[in-house]
Image 1 (cartoon, rainbow, N blue to C red):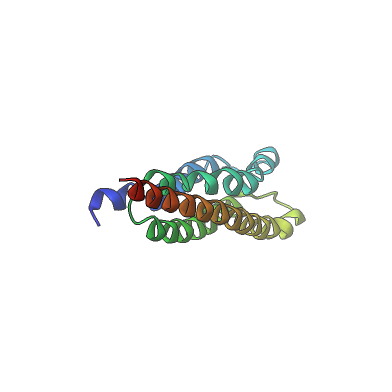
Image 2 (tube, rainbow, N blue to C red):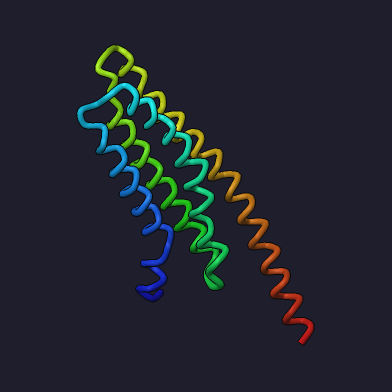
Length: 141
C-alpha cells in the first residue's frame, strides 16, 4: 500500500473534520448560551453529513475496496467519537443544564452508528454491483 493511498484515505478526512469542529468549538470562550446552543447542531450535522462523505473514498478507489471499507468504518467510529467529544467539552451553559450535555454526545454516537450501518448497506450493494459489472465485462472479452 503506497503512502499516497494512506494519506488520501478516510483517516485524513476525519482529521480535517475534527480540526474544523475543534476550531469552531474553540470560539466558545468565554462560553455563551447562544453559541453553546448553536454548537449542539454539530451533534447532528457531523454524523448526518460527515459519515456519508467519508464513503466517497470507497466509491473512488478501484482496488482493495473491502479493506478500504473496513478502514472507513474504523475512521468513522473513531472520528465521530472524538469530534462529538470535542463538541460536548465546548458546550457550557454555566448552570444546571450542563448535567444533560452528555446526552447529546450519546445521541450523536447513536445517530452516527445508525448512519454508518445504512452507509455500509449502500456500500455493500455498490461493491456487489461493481464486482458483477467487472465480471460481466471480463466475460464479454
